[in-house]
Length: 596
Ligand code: GTP
Ligand code: SPV
Ligand code: MN
Image 1 (cartoon, rainbow, N blue to C red):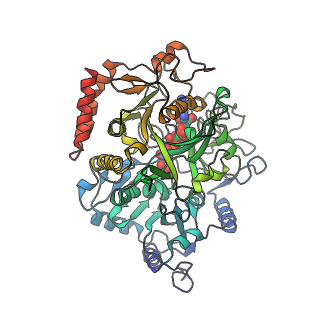
Image 2 (cartoon, protein in one colour; image 1 turned 180 degrees about the vertical axis):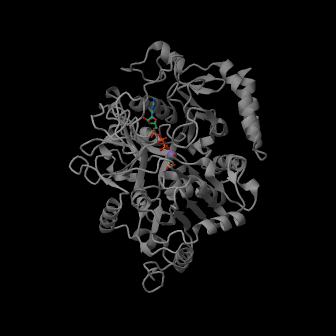
Image 3 (cartoon, helix red, strand yellow; image 1 turned 180 degrees about the horizontal axis):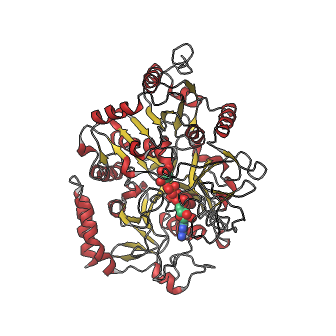
């Protein structure tokens, strides 16, 4: 029987619209019970016990990792599925050439068919959540209805979930409606559909990450980007960090890198010994909502409350803060498990113990050539676990952004760091950036694709309009207050496939140059593609850095022939957008001229 707590008397919400919607979805999906989540500690303990009893979570060694659990997802459901992700606007042109589109009327009808009776024998959880600092004018409320306990427990980490959200909602009708139903995890019946005109998401047939935790990519990026277009702000796939210089001055920097290209790592890096007087504080590791503030500058909040980070490659050497934060109260997904109930993954920098179970729970053999942890295995951890967490993540005003960094995974061509000539040139750099694909989405890995502003899979509307919106934000801000725009590449390789740049903590050397440039200092050399730090001395501080002079020269080299060879790709990429702002055509022509 459906519990009757959708009535005004017994319901925890004073929003009639929310009660009505929950009732309507329950009438369709027909769950055995409805549970309204309050976000309390007691609720977490109760649901965790249930998840362990049901085999959804495996309790890890509670002495070594208190409050930590392991989840093994269905092996066919291990990453976002971009080919099954749709933007369902009334007009196809509004989804644009880079999104899958389907007709909203037909899609609602098809999904209703799939949802009919889909929660029979199951519980429907009502998960209210706030994206952004509580009480902030920049925050938004969402409610996810889900039949997955894994989703509920992850949403509790990733968002400000429960009563606080119902309080923020009050009697309002203004909340994102997310319906998530696991079905039978058959990829034939898996769809992640967005209806921006209704502020609604329906996701069926997947229990994984960005497909199922609807607050994240579905709401905070795809739907929020449309809200931002209409309301005059930006929803971006960007980390936010505070960089404190040896003088104690803090500058906030945001950075857009595609999935699995280094946002979490940069957001909490530990500077090397020579840079110990510089400090990094994390505001956010994946998403930034940004708008022009009363002072004419760009202000950003991290809408999330936790991190859903990539496990492989995370070690005490590469990311000490991450290793510390996943020590407790963390849910691991698809990592390997040691015989004593601890976790292990490739690149952890500790040898795999005998008796390791792989991410599917099968005994794993060393040197078998098979990975023990899935390449897209992850941890979900509360942001307050991070030793580098910045309390300004809770500031309702957000933080003022001085620099925006774009970046991607490029084995060649793109130098270590590049500064744009101005905002419009920076928007052009973002609009044409490319990156090699990673395991964060299903499909081939290592294929170069254009991923504008790291938003290719996440922009909920026509990307031509999106570029125009970036230019408008630039016009709205005070010229002197606009962030400077940079472009970085940690992933340049030599012919033998070796990374030329050590990355991770050493990236603080590049941040220090960015800081100096923002302060109106720091040397830069003009090149046809933008400003780069001079190779000899005045640019990147290489004191104590283990990179040869030849490698450093290669990292900062701008090969005009290579850049010229990219121009046809740029042109073809931009040609997809019928409504491309003329400024970007002009930027392309200007680049072509500068390259000669
Ligand atoms: P999403 O959560 O998918 O959006 O990814 P992300 O952008 O936060 O990427 P993350 O920081 O998790 O890094 C992804 C992978 O890249 C991990 O395996 C890291 O170890 C690796 N990585 C991160 N930074 C660097 C770097 O500076 N150099 C190199 N070589 N690898 C890096
Ligand atoms: C990404 O793919 O960019 C992620 C992981 O941050 S997911 O939540 O699955 O989208
Ligand atoms: Mn991401």
